[in-house]
Image 1 (cartoon, rainbow, N blue to C red):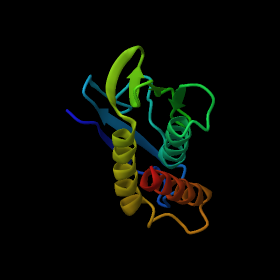
Image 2: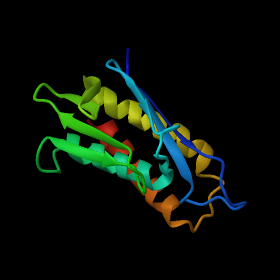
Image 3: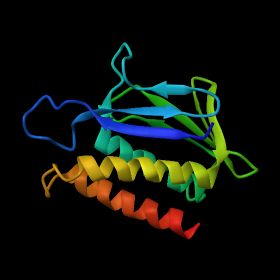
Length: 152
């Protein structure tokens, strides 16, 4: 099974959509699956900000801009955690609570994250106001991530 990731926005509490709206991450890999949905306590996160952090963190880990071989993703304003470890053979391990969810070639993992992020952005960025700070951050992060993946 190959890695499959999905990011989604929950129904907004306010009429006006915002970059601070809550959302969820679903991840299914060769070793198992996880989701921030349906947990107690609630593990939904500010999804636009969390996605920015996830893209930046994964990119810097694989590009070795970050010291060490590990990185912990914590969903923004959430207790949802994914642990990333860059293995010596070029694979990227994603685990949660000690349980390995996926081990795939780092390039394949980044390509899946990019696919899922672009799918999310195509649907959920257009409704955000142009001056929304979270929108600007996600657009910039997505551009950097896309360029890094294309240049690998």
